[in-house]
Amino acid sequence: MAGLIELVYEKSAVNPALLHEELATALGNKLAGISTGQGKVRVHALDTIQEAERALIEPIILAHDAKKLTAGQQAEADRAAKMSALSKPWASWTAVDKDELLRLVAEKMGIGVA
Image (tube, rainbow, N blue to C red):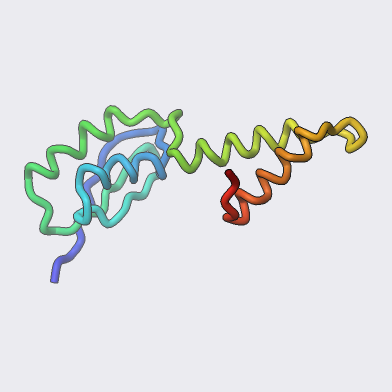
């Protein structure tokens, strides 16, 4: 049975969800997770990780842009912006505004909207 190792790297600004996706793309199931804090990224990996796989980690962390969002984070930011745009008195809403609200609610509920 494989154990875990922790590899520590210096990086102060991190979007943990995005960095996890970036590392998972490179390491696959060898990545157990990441943790961040105090200007460090801790990569938790299976101890069966190969040296060539380890060599991929630091360049990914160095290239990581904490300002970028995952697709899910971007979708949520877009939904929040749309909801914010609808924050106005009901009497000023148009039919398009009402349709947009219904679309947002349906999307949040997982109901497919064409």
